[in-house]
Image 1: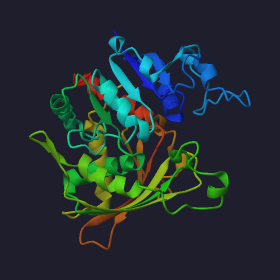
Image 2 (image 1 turned 135 degrees about the vertical axis):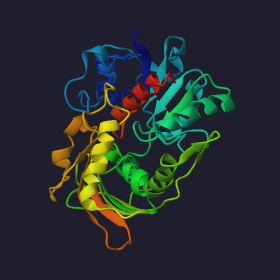
Image 3 (image 1 turned 30 degrees about the horizontal axis):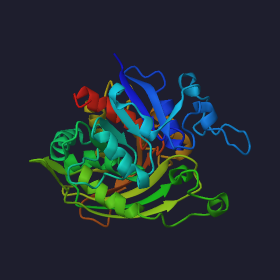
Image 4 (image 1 turned 45 degrees about the vertical axis):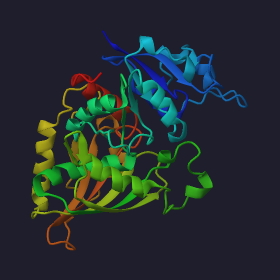
Length: 358
């Protein structure tokens, strides 16, 4: 029996990514979709039609999946929780807090918003990286007297950084991290960046982004003990920028390690994680969690964004960093609309289902 799921915020860009990611899923079936009162009561294909131009605003590529075209969009208050097993929330962070709280009292909620990320009893989960933190969900339910829980994804910029840091931290230790991001336009949402603002340009500041990366990196890489996450003892400095790339975030990373790292051995470290990664075999997991390039011209967004259907994190330009006694520098690519968004949330749901949390 497939688990019955609802997508809240189904008409937005991330909601559409959820619809696409869940098409034909072997474990989950979308039985309800919800959005704002403006679109409630409409068939999905009409709910995303621009009233001024008549154009159907399907933004994620390909065709609208048949299973959802004629499905009626509900208002958030009309969602029937008695006939659901799981909520996927694609709601913006402002209204997300109230909406996700309402549903978590009855059901598990997996969210792409930041509304709950920084609560003490809420883990920020990346499947394959900090699966053990999922046990905090039971503590969250107990403390709040909820039947469900909220499990948010990290910021999409944090995702690639943490995924690439984890093997280094486990094998060599990590003391300091410096990162500069080159983030895709799509990370800003439909109204985030104007064409005139980004064409022939780089935007050197993304509001609140750097603080999110610092806090989330330490939390995700921390240790869960006695119902509390103890942040990793890593100092994180970052500069987050927006560049004229459509999809996929590239990051330049400098890591000071506790033990000496031979750059030529880094590939072995990531290959070892590929062989033992906990997500292996899950429906949305890529064949390889990590792709490692010795070609100094990689990673490149246009070449990497289709690898593993956007779920593989790519590492390249791995070299010894001379600023530190022990350290590495490298480049990474992570797909902000796949692993960093809805499909990553579906992978998280698969991991939590296997753990018996759903």
